[in-house]
Amino acid sequence: MAKIPGSAGLVLVEGVRYLDEPVAVFEGMLTGWENQQQSRLLASTTIVPRVALVRRFTEFAGSYPWAWTAADIEDFTVSLTSETGGRLAPATIRGYHLVLRMFCDYLTDPRYEWLRQCRDRFGQIPSQVCHEWNTVAHLADYEGRPGRRPFSYDEVQQLFDCLDNRVERIATSGRKGALAALRDAQMIKTAYAYGLRRNELCRLELVDLRPNPHVSEWGTYGSLHVRYGKATRGSAPRRRTVLTVPEFDWVVPGMRQWVEQARPILNAADHPALWVTERLTRVDGGFLERRFSRIRAEAGLSADLTLHCLRHSYVTHLIEFGYPERFVQEQVGHHYASTTAIYASVSNDFTKQTLRTALHRVYARAPKPTTTEANR
Image 1 (cartoon, rainbow, N blue to C red):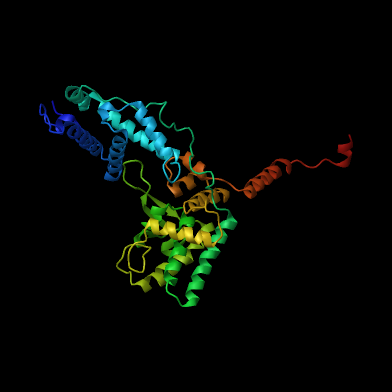
Image 2: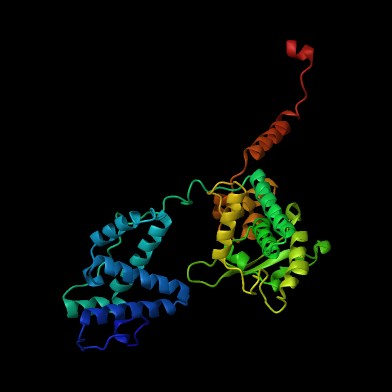
């Protein structure tokens, strides 16, 4: 009978005793699990961190999988919540629990023969040590930090004013860095104008600039083709086209200035990336985050406002502009409408205006009673 990918018989020699049997069997388990995941076409970027976590947990527990207990999971969780540098986010810990649960499911599935191998070699068998009472439950749709929120309109303007002033200050001082400052300003504005994630923004290339046939005056800046959208676990990046919306048409002159005037000065004609450094390398996410943090501090904005908060602002402001939820969902690349709803946080001004509109719609239709009618 043919063995399925991940079977113990494909990585261990039947009937052979290894010099260091526990190590050999454990390494065979990891290799088999990798094979099983590869057969599901999961990406290496998904598999490698999972295997690393299993190794980390094994070292923490001080025992191999056939000797793990539920108490080991509980102790591991406690250690994660008390690590130097602060408590890990619940979503992160839940992700760890999910990986360990999947590994135990793999080991305890009879089709992969690890139960028999461990029984014959060690007199013990693996068990599922992740249960509903010792793992993090997914009770809330959003588990991010409460302090993180969309930028208000005034805060967006404050940030953009700081970006523009920074470019002008460096340019007039005669110091180097004016092109970099212009690039940073346009990157941050583009993140907001199209609701992009950090990786989506950094991975943009010149060929991703697309026209919108309905707005010819925008030229090739009518839309962005995002080829490196956030992937669902183990799958390829999701693609989408993000349209330039009229309320954010101010981004078009800025893009033209960067692409047609500033970028050529760097002699980057042969480089495919939209955002390049003075050394003709692609701007990476870590650099952008550090630069954003510095500019945010210069603008006097709260440290809770991250680059990703601009994406939240984009969703919120599109909804306030009256765009249908389905359109907003497609623009930002959310698989579920409920995810888009989490991002939305309409302003007080918008809610007041909505109420005023409703009051006018309901009460303005009925004619006011005359004095005679009122006295009846």
